[in-house]
Image 1: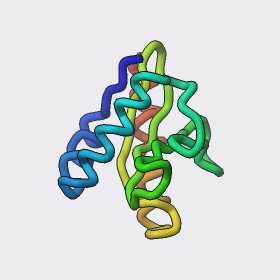
Image 2 (image 1 turned 90 degrees about the vertical axis):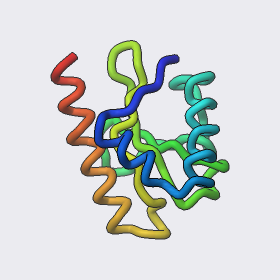
Image 3 (image 1 turned 60 degrees about the vertical axis):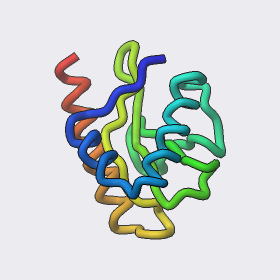
Length: 109
């Protein structure tokens, strides 16, 4: 399945530490292979968010997450941010950003 980033998420991806960026690339590869069937611990639903999932590199052991949803025939990553326990405020900020960006992407589709 095609996985793409919003413009803002691409900038966030490139701002990740190099080792974490590579780990995230590997997780994105799993998402491309499995699509919506990518299961826990590699992906999970974001509680309190409407139709949003989190990509969990290293089966959840990474301090970073990618926030995504399916829009049409693609999976779109709307934001990258910190893991919830490591940085609760940063996690909430990234979730809000992803929801706003992905809602805007869906409206354009």
